[in-house]
Image 1 (cartoon, rainbow, N blue to C red):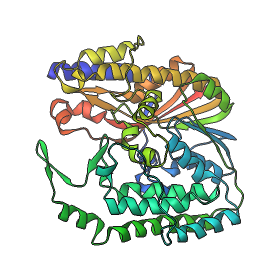
Image 2 (cartoon, helix red, strand yellow; image 1 turned 135 degrees about the horizontal axis):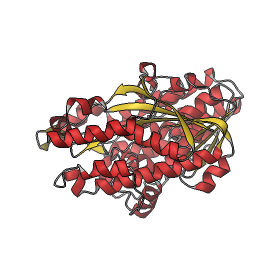
Image 3 (cartoon, rainbow, N blue to C red; image 1 turned 180 degrees about the horizontal axis):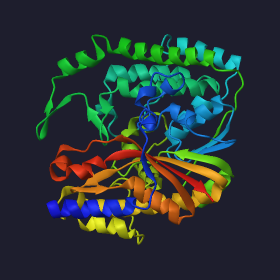
Length: 439
């Protein structure tokens, strides 16, 4: 075990040696979105991952900004606030809808219509919207909760755009809290189950329902709806009537034509999916189905195939090799669960996608333009994968000059990995900001 750790450390140090790596604690809060859930506009929808809005205050964005993985639109909204032209792309139609709706320009009429329909929703007999044909729907919502949600949705569907989009966003934002599941780790967990050593224990319905929803589940839904719409109304009052709305494109930044359609930019700022096996389509499948962004399992599977190959569900062989990565993969215990599940092929595919991204960024950045990438390292089968420095190396080979790899904060690993990894390796479990310049 010590020999593996030592060999792992040697490869990690060799990759890092020619790169300008420095400690940058000023970025610690900026690389994490979790502290931004109470900020105006950003609080409208809880997206799974992303950097803080404050990141945009720590960079020189220039006149035109591009976020290849725009997610819920953090960078786009902050650019609009500064009257900077911005473009975002994402393969997730839910993310595209959320980002575009949050960042759109709303007239006084739009705001009044939103407030009017927010009050009407669920208060009168407007009927009931049709439930999606999602296979797990009965397990995801209590009957009374689903009925209340669909009654609200029926009113939303009668409103005119763009007020309807704001109403739909508010509705989507309360689905998780109103459901029987919550996002945790690599997917969704049921509120009716409690984690125990090596298993999950069932919590009686009378206990967990009352604990989460209280005695009146319909009132719970109504309260969440009122809170969500009130937050949007309050934040719209703070927003100027006219601002520089960004362009949001549903498409992959790994696709050359999509990126060329973005045009030239001064800054690309982004946080790609980490090589952490998280399936973000799985985490947001409730919102995807309920929002009508997918209507069959095949459509969801098709979306998964468009995403960056950061998890085990995105298959497909690759001949792309990074010699240093291959050395690390050879050190992995072949009997470990992650290796048997195919993590080696996943990591090869992930870094091939990083290369595609780097080449596309090199094509859309203006001379002197900057690429700012927030990314975290990972560990599998007792082996550290230094994603930040491997990405920096790939960016460099694609023609970008690496200015710095700014180490923002330390990341934790699972107890299993901690038991088999040395202290020196654990010190390299980190989240970093890789800053490059197009020559």
